[in-house]
Image (tube, rainbow, N blue to C red; front, side):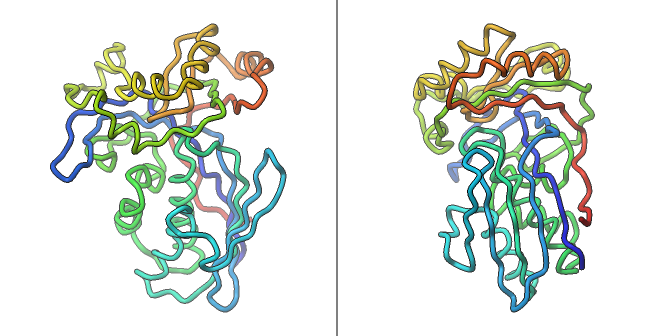
Length: 288
């Protein structure tokens, strides 16, 4: 089969309410996932001998790292975890060469790792001829991370539960400027903080459209990570700033792409930033 090429898109949480903490320690949420037309680029090709290899190119350092088999600790890389879990559950003995051009910052709240893993499940399902259903892939993905199902289904969506209960939403077309300061926010640290709000009332989409929403993780993240506080101050000169997920990325809505490019032209050294447009659906798995 010819190689497959896919965008693993960034996501924004347009709001994030923590509604309760369950007995098992997980938090129930309400959020609105907006997919963006910007993200990591992935390529998948068949490989002989059942070998699964991962080749990562960081677009900032412009260097390649290659990992084969268990050379990279699986707990630190969702792509390999997804590939091996799919092979294990399906019984497939086929291999794959996976190339990742990494653009999204790690620990930025943009879903980069989850998107990469979700795209891996989608692409290998086709490359290996498994014909697993979307529901099957979502079950596998949820075992790897709460954000994976939204990327597997490939739609901007209203989410509840731990993020797995999804209702597709068609949002108005909107441009965003997204800025990430040089820090990695630990999701576990934010959700374990004693000051995190955990009892927000559930809302409806009409409340979101009326502006009656917030990101419950924002106060904790801004207190624990001064770089995020600095990003709020810097980007706040240009519009109302919101934070995606648990951080560290912050964003504002834009009238058009040109406005984003103008803002990002003065981005502080060492920061990551991009302008992107929201999209309702991810691209289908396509051949090169």
